[in-house]
Structures are given as C-alpha cells and as structure tokens.
Amino acid sequence: MLINQNGTLNSSNYYYPYDPQLARFAQADTIVPDPGSAMAFNRYMYVSGNPLVYTDPSGHCPMCISAAVGGLVGGAISYGSQVAANVSENGLTTDAFKDVNWKSVGKAAVVGAVGGATFGMGLAAGGAVAAAVGISSASGTAASIAGAATIAVSGAAAGQTSRAANNILNHRSVTKGLGNPKDIAIDATLSLVSVRALRGKYRNTLYSDVAKPGSFAQKSLPGKWRYANKDERKLIRRYLQEEGCHHCGTKVSAKPIADHMPPRSRATSNTQFQYYPQCKICMILQRKYLRWHRISPYVPQSRHWSAWRPYQTWGPTWRLWE
Image 1 (tube, rainbow, N blue to C red):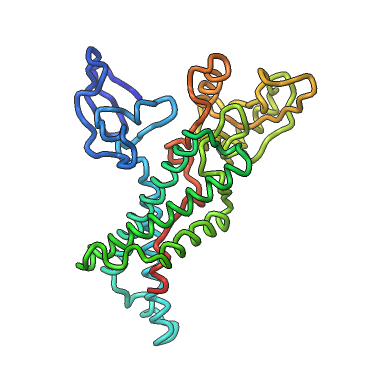
Image 2 (cartoon, one colour):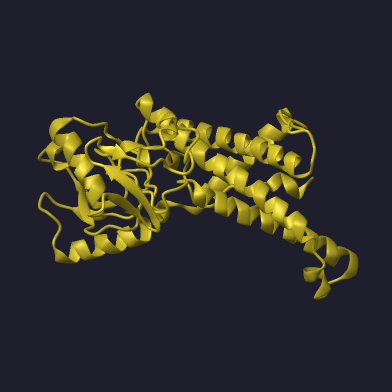
C-alpha cells in the first residue's frame, strides 16, 4: 500500500484519497469486493483492515482469479461439447470447429464465472469458520473433515448459483431447477473429486497455524538450530518460487525465509528441525504470535495472484449432461 504526497493510495491504476486526520480513505471502493464478508461492506476499508496479510492490486475483487478460471472452464465446456456434436454428425472437418454458437459459449462463460466466484468465496468462508473453532490445516483428521466439508458445500453452492445465472441468461425463472438433491450431491461430489485430481488435499482449503507446517507445505530441507546458510537459503528461495510460502501460498517475497519447523522457541534438545519456505509477512505474523500472543495464530491464503492453485478450479460440469 503506497500513499503518495498528495494523500492518495496508489493501487495499480487506481487512486484513492486518504485523510490522515480521520485515518481512513475519503473515497469508497467502487464495489463490495467480498459479499460473504461483513467487513467488505465497509467500502472505505482496505483489504478488510489487514494489509499485512492481504493485498488488493486492482483495488477490486479478490475472487477474480476463481471467477476468471470458472469462466474459461464454462466457455471451454460449451465450445467443446458443440465441436464434439459437430464431429459426431459430420465427421472431423474444419467446419466442426467453426460452426459454433458463440452466444451459447459466452453464456456458459458467464455461468462459469458466477460459479467460480461462488466456489472461491465458499472456500474462503469455510476456512474462516474452521479457524474460528480452532481448526487449521495442521489439525490432522479434523482438518481433512473440515476441508472436505468446505469443498463439498462450496461446490454445491456454486452449482446452484451457476444454474440460477443460467436461468437468468435464458429468460427463465431464477429458481427453476434449483434445490434438486441429486444435482446438489453430484456438484458436491465432483468438487471433492476434482480437488484430488488436481493434486490438492482437503486440508489445503483451511487456514495455516503459524506455529506448524502450513496449508501449502510441500518441499523442505533438513534443518538445524542455527539459521540456514547461503546454500540452504538459495534452495529455500527456489522452493518458495515453485511451491509458495508454506503458510499463505504466495510465491513472491522480497526476502524468502528458511522457517524453522517446529519453531525454535518450542524446541527441545532432541527436536529434529525442517526448513520450510516462508514469506516475510508470514514471518512477521509468526514472530508476533510466538513472542507476544497478541494476534491469532491462523493465517489465510494470500490474496496475491501467485497463491492461487489449480485445485481451486470450479466449472459448470453439469452442462456436460444437460
């Protein structure tokens, strides 16, 4: 966040005036970025009042990646199904790829974007609810159960909102076909299957505990009591670029940290350490929690684009059999 000499926040191409006497922005955000969060309805607040954890480079929707990917998947499903039908009827010709109803493809993209955004918001909300009751990605079986429930509910909700959007685009009653138990079960099941198929784990949807290996913990190095040396830090930097910060998932950090797990303040003489890649922001949050316990130990996924993972993809797969 950068406030320039004219008292404005420079967020990419957006400029918001800031009043230092009121300690708040004098111009509201142009949208409610996350309708699932009560704090988002205060459009004078920047990233839910937590700029240490979140960024908002566009000044807008933190779920835009989920929506964009959902739109691409929806459009691709519509286009692919039409091409397949053309090939089935007339054989494999160039016309099979051209004789497509682009209006239907566009509608499917919109439907996919609505469902993708819903799925992304559902995952974020589920992680927050789990953290509120003390469940993080490091909570073992409870984390797997909570993560699976979050994915299933989010997938079912995405299926319903995308169907509602499809009804609107086709001039039907918004509620037509909604609430069908079979559809809800299929959408929930497909979401669970797709997460696993895309190399995700159910616990990945939950917040990380800064005192334990995080939701994005993948690669690590055998550690020692001392800080990592030059060669170890070089590897940790590569791991962060490949797998992301093990707590928040961002793959971008000015100074990657070789994070001791378990933390040295909780170690004993027989502790076997591992070095995990960590971003500087999560290091600061971890330090505040371990030293003073003034903040929550739970860290959500970063809103930086690099923290998005393929297993967070959702698309209106129900269009394949309708």
